[in-house]
Amino acid sequence: MKKDLLNRSAAPGPADDDPLPDGMMAEERRMQILQIIRAEGRAKVNDLVHRFKTSAVTIRSDLNELHQRGVIQRSHGGAVIQDTVFRESPLNERLKNQSKEKQRIGAMAATLIREGETVILDSGTTTLEVARQLKNIPHLQVITNGVNIAVELLGARHTQTIMMGGTVRNESASIVGRATEDMLEQFSADKLFLCGAGCDPEFGVSGTNLEETMANRAMLRAAREIIVVADASKFTRRSMSLIASFSEVDIVISDLSLAPELQERVRSFGCKLILV
Image 1 (cartoon, helix red, strand yellow):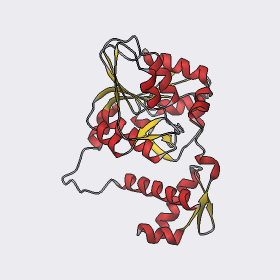
Image 2: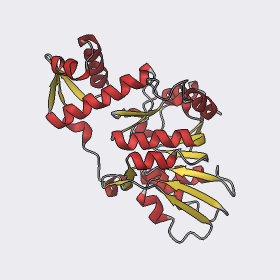
Image 3: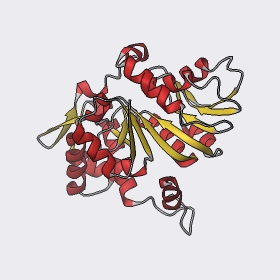
């Protein structure tokens, strides 16, 4: 499983205070830059150089990368907020989008789950459809940070639901924060079912909120098999914060309208692709 590679790459070095890998350091810096721009509306290269104690070349590279993702707009000497990127749709609106496709994806995903397994469901609307299909699988344990998922599984006689602690995000009905991540580190699961807000194959599975992304990354570390459940519309989107590259994913379940070139690209990462 690709998860084994993930575990080895995540293993600590000789000392607890070893620095993060360069790629992770760069990504975290970009997310902090993004939060600054979101809070202040704009940022100048020189100010960011001073704040992060790095070079202007590095900051320009970060801003260019964020601009390519469509989450900021480059301006002379810095960058400004890209307003349209951060308007996360309310949960009840997202439930209506591609609802038939999500139902088919959820039903297919449930067929991959066996009696007695432990699975993690993130807080997405497609994983909600997975949860709706699980109630008759015997001796199932479901770990989730989704308030919507936990509510759906209330009264499911064969399912033990384990809810993460932390801070509730109203926009996504999810639980996030350091307490969530710490709790996830204590678990081991057979499978993770992951939605993500964007699934651009060139960037990976991505989210709109940094705290939620960090919780999703903790889920990746806890699961032996990673399964992405996403309708075709998500494969043309790239959100602000990377959750996982497709090389870390074992299975992708999407719908039949996924473009052939995107199908080929997803398979090129070694993912098993299931279309319904």
